[in-house]
Amino acid sequence: MKEKKSIKKNFIWQIGIEVTNMLLPLVTSPILARRMGPQTLGTYSYVYTVTYYFYYFAFLGMYQYGTREIAVVRENRELLNKKFSELVSFQLMHGSIVVIVFLAYSFWFSKYNSLMLIQTMYLVGAAVIQLNYVFSGLEDFNIMAIKTMLIRSIGVVLIFTLVHTKDDLEIYTTIMAAEPMIDAFVLIIMARKKVKFVKVKMSDILQHAKGLYMIFIPLMATFLYGTMDKLMLGNMSDMVQLGYYSNAEKALIAKKLAVALSVVLVPRMSKLAGNSDKKKFMELLDKSIEVILLLNFAFGFGTAAVSSIFSVVFWGKEFSDCSLLIQIMSFTLPAYGLTYVVNNQYLVPLKKEYIYIRATIFGAIINFLINFILIPQFGAMGASSATLITQFVVLIYECFMIRKEYSVLRSLISSSPYLTFALLMYFCVKSIDKMASNTIFSLLLEITIGSSLFFVLCLMYWGISKKTMYLNVIKDAIGRISKAFRSLCCYVMEEI
Image (cartoon, helix red, strand yellow):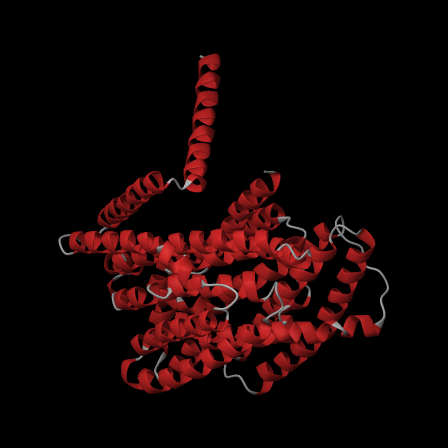
């Protein structure tokens, strides 16, 4: 029971991290869209994307690999310190080389020299000295959540107060680049209470290279077909189309739900795999997939349904073209969530990265070809369509490869009622959309009606099928709210 509560609490904390990372940029996007415009936002998106390529080369698969390695030895203090020291040493050596290459690129090859040099802060903080994998492996998600929420919130305040026109692009870039640097320093200070750096042999440090590169290859391939759209839009179309595409991506908050659950469960799944507890491993995987499909069906179709009003309310009429882009991207969410779970909760813990590698390289090639064909003619619309097709191609390939050990199709069939509820919600909200005006009231009305319909349908289904897991969560939440309300009433009465 304690273990289940731990997973639930960690999931909530991790959702806090991921939603903060998506929600705060979404909150600032209306202001930035009006103050900076699509051209300037497109320039920043291009610079950030290029920097992120270097980030991937610098950090490799350290978060996933480091989490797994730390989780396995966390109960043995001596082994934990040794493993930590090996990983950090490799990280510093490898990351420093990538930073040198990045600086050379910034000076001699980039046409955005000043912006790229500012991004050096991002690269160092996010990759070279970042220790988030230590806390993930130890399952200390509350520390990371509080720290992330605080730092990102301060960043939002600075953006609102310091960024006013398109001429403030360097200030905006500095704020965004400083966040991971501050984040890294905070974690370094806090890590001193958890682990200790000890002297290790060079051979022990280098032994991690193979494992890191095995995870890096599929991660890089996934990133390629996730960001290739932006690079190809910037080169084959224009910065306005890239600005539309980047803003549409910010609306996909639900993408982080799959990330949140996987991040929480990877250390637990790795430990179960290391202990050869196959039954419990599969039970946890089944529950994880069902929860992810439930959430991504709801948020995916819900986001698509309100996209028309959302685009205009948040970013203004200048960004009305984002509506259709959001709809297309929203339909990728169920496939994205399921693929993410399979990769990080099944393939990585069981060390079947070769399937992950083949699938993502295949996906990157497909994405490039479709982008190459569609972007010149359709711009951001073509890039969105390429992402949609690629995501489902990768999912189908991985499901086929693991079909003998695990049936994803069985999980999809068992979760089909949620797809039905999501479709009903989508068409209901879309019917309202035809009569609604582009106001914040109309947006809130659509969200309220759509979410209420989906929740009621789920509640009826859980009651009929006796899905006690969800009913217990709701009962527990109601109990906690009631308890808090009673405490508040008692406090008020005492004061009176």
